[in-house]
Length: 112
Image 1 (cartoon, rainbow, N blue to C red):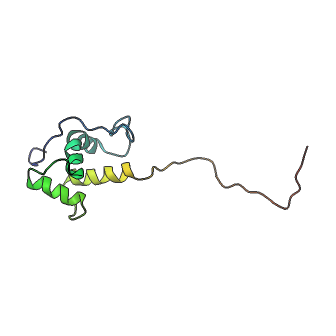
Image 2: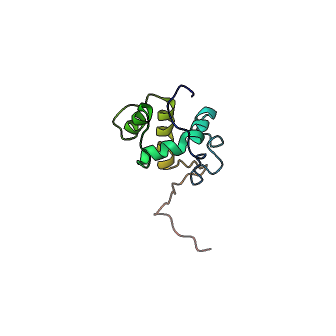
Image 3: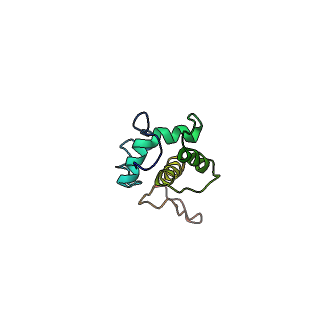
């Protein structure tokens, strides 16, 4: 990432609400993606929300991607969009139980 003109975050980026055990243990991100989120996440969040002003063309393009005015080109842009989709979407919950209940309304009620 040394050739990318993108600021490191002022602190490590964590999301204790959705990823309490960390990005690398979630199963949603690769090791490289979790490293990018942790290292650059506070800067990406600041640029995406408008709290930070872009200081380079790379950061300006990142803001354009966040506003859906440009397509993602860098790994940082792709991982941020992936994080936003997963963190803001409804989590999938898998069960081993069928939630459909079968009731026969014509059968007599047994009051034993």
